[in-house]
Length: 578
Image (cartoon, rainbow, N blue to C red; front, side, top):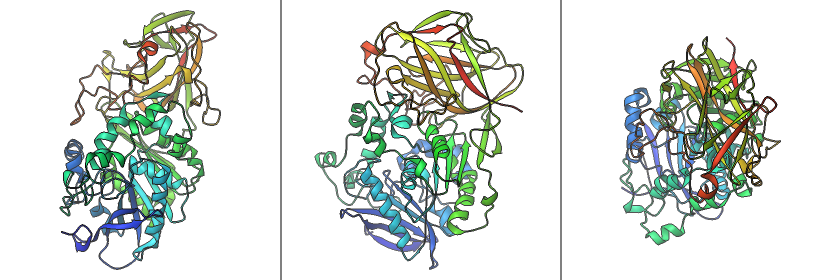
């Protein structure tokens, strides 16, 4: 079978490896799935690095089998031959009069060039692809973007440029701030990017050719028609792990790889996951809050990272949204409330509820003070005292009394601590947890872990300075990350820590807890391996402790929390009245 070809099969016109020429002469290659009948249709565009020709099951067998067993409706109604990681299934969209346009980003899959994720060059490529799609004879001139994670991030990036042909975006679990959401949580480097780049980008780099994956549909190599040696492959890609490790503070490099959502005028649907603590949750809420358009909607769900998008629930929501903005259909979206929440309950149960705004206007923010006397969270400021812990130990955990009635917490959170260290810096890892009456911890299936706590927050204390532009006090403190202010050993500092948004209905008799640590959270529940990813115990692969970043001589230290009535540490929680 030829590398470039077109035909009609499976109820679709299929075009493979169509070349979209960029302004520098490099072609981006696309697969196009469109209705058989001639006409002009709206385009759902995805642009990303995971190789359009790589089948979901081949590249991600554990995730595929998990979706097949736990979310059978995600695979129903399709042969699933064209399923690919984190992008729409054309068999579910083309029959409804959409065109699915899948484009391999520069240097990956079948597109030649230099691999540089989220770079300005990649964003320019994406904008040119959007313009190209709108000009084709089979297009109605309206382009939408939909996809998970990388494809959602690119949707934010494109929308911030407001290209004329981009009519709407659905950003499903995709961050907006490369520094704060992804690379350096609270200023602390996550090890995710080095591992992700090797596992998911280098493995499908253009030029692997016959050494890489094969497309189930065409039988052709999913990583290009040529086979290059390792030296040439290395020359054609950035070393992302070294890039992020060397860039400690926020800078223009990170800003170029982040979306300024205040500039967005495009209608958007931001879909977040309560369990996406390690990467995407912050960006989806921030993207919604800060977006410049009035035509914006927020949806929040639970479950894992890859399946809800493909379920009947996820597909129906997207079609309702895109039918309105790309096809002009009366889908009922004109009456869609601005916020759609799946409120989380113990036992992996969710109740669907619509709201008119986010954060919820009726939120009653309540301070729970840390008390050193009995290691409790109380409604009254603590008496004077102090507690120390080893940063690499288990830290300190403070528990509420059992709740006397069912109580809902849904929204943003923050913690204020007064702390000192015996070295010039300290890393804080804060964890909001839920415990049963017998003090067994309750965890949830998260985006990429089966034992996630309610929320997490991080802070590198030398980067404690707040950003006046991004902070929304008191419920959302955001650090500037533009300078380092080393600690004076033994001196007490006031620290405001952003915690990730959450939702939980706490049953009567249960307790909340706040853990303060110097390293990643680990649940006492039995870790469940996710396919090739072993020993996940509450944080998935969003872990910290990279030796070049968390230098042992500084961060393997002792930290002391300080308590008195005038400077009482607390966590601020969003209580939702009945």
